[in-house]
Image (cartoon, rainbow, N blue to C red; front, side):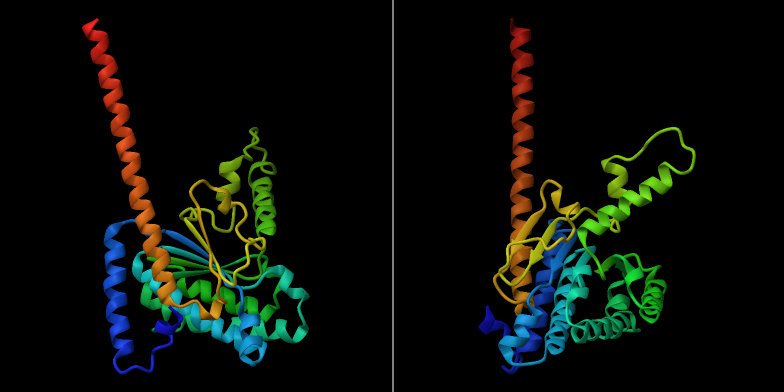
Length: 290
């Protein structure tokens, strides 16, 4: 796959790739077996930079362009919600130089995503910055609020940018929201349960997580979407490549595999339900014969 994805210098390659991508995404959409909500742990930008002898901030830049290509394929294929782990609260422990570079990159790329003619407008995406934004500086918060305001009426798809974020903080945030809504307003009933916690997460009201993808060959969740990933049926894909090397072909294969597995699972479930109905009919018939 690496060889195929790096063949953009072949004459007509990009046109052919775009044509194939359009056919592929259209086929997935009509199959109705595409994941509705995909989460991404975009790991490996720093290692990519070291591997290629470039600055860390250039590695993060390359990772952003990879994210753009992957998200475009997802939205074209029928994914309605994508959540990307852009910056962990733990990342504040990195060097001031890298943190500043990431903040500047975030400011620039958030603006780019919502610029006229860019991704948000093209796919009708509502951009949501989720996490503890109180940890950010005032100017960046203003840019974030502006991006969310510009896209608030878009309703075809959602892009959650986790910045800065951890799954534990999200659960804590949900508990605080529940306490404020259900315990401080004089209501007689204590309503904190799984449903209310789910509803008050940053992703509350969005499609449940179907698919989680992590790159860099590391097998851990890194405190990402801990509540959502515990739901039954969430598929986890651990990919042994660095995030900037994760191209559309790998993503297409994962979407195709997910669609096949879901189709097979639905067919099996249907057969099992038919078998149950037949068993019940047989049992009822036997009773009548007796």
